[in-house]
Image 1 (cartoon, rainbow, N blue to C red):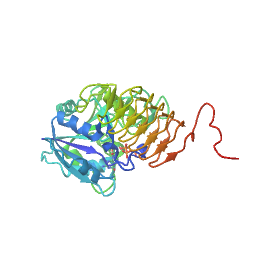
Image 2: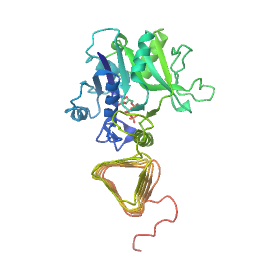
Image 3: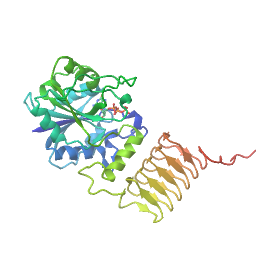
Image 4: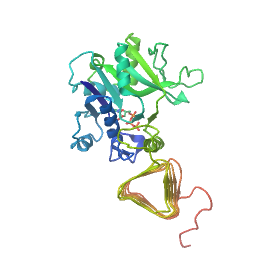
Length: 366
Ligand code: GTP
């Protein structure tokens, strides 16, 4: 029986306020929660049992899957206090059902969107008789990441901290957040404390001469941990730049059948419009996620942004790379700049924020 563990216990702080009430893997991308895309992909790869390693808002995962009727067993390993990535893997390992010490166990971070062939990694792991196989991806600028150099045979040489200088960029390969563990190696991770798999487990295995291999691929890969990456990931799923069994056919925009879109509005770039949303005349929604019951008034423009459910955007307002929390209101003729994150329930009055052009006239009586 092929088994998998998905790490879903993180707080997702970089995606707040979207993650205030919803764990990152349960946020909607391309019409389904992200975790459902991952589950569908795991099932396609022949996985029959998944253990969710939960902590933050743990009960919401059981809620999400309580009516799941497909041919997949799901277990929940709940951490009272977060155990870090290594501790979480070890803790979830208690619920695995296979009894072979050599069985390959797939482990996925719950926030990585990737086109990699999961069954292919497991096959490679077994053919190399590896202790751990890591999926590695190449990035154009490796300075923001820990690096994972390998030899010609793919054997991991070391795990390097984020490089500070160009000379320290000895490779452009980074850990892609998807692993295959030999079951006995997973079971040897300490169970009584917080452990980071990247900083502790993997470097120790390499130092001990264990068989740790990398599998470097050119497949689509994106870590959905930041707002911009999150909207781009969703748009790429909708537009078919990365495949998901849950997205039938690539399209320019995924519009819920109950949403009402004015014929003069333009919804493009892989945007998603949620149920009961109302999009007004001449609105532009580009590469963005519009949640359920959101209203966007005439002439507003929303680029590379997320507007969470039950919020409203006033006429002629412009949002670029912005996150609007749920139940918020952005009045008319605002211009919200990149990286702004509005908390849930915030109200910005008309003409309250502008970053370019002529400032609004003084609204107070002198
Ligand atoms: P940020 O707070 O924005 O950094 O996000 P995060 O909390 O998700 O952390 P990060 O992106 O580094 O986590 C990578 C993956 O590991 C995500 O899928 C997390 O859900 C998961 N994760 C991180 N820490 C833990 C933990 O202590 N326990 C469990 N079960 N999962 C974790």
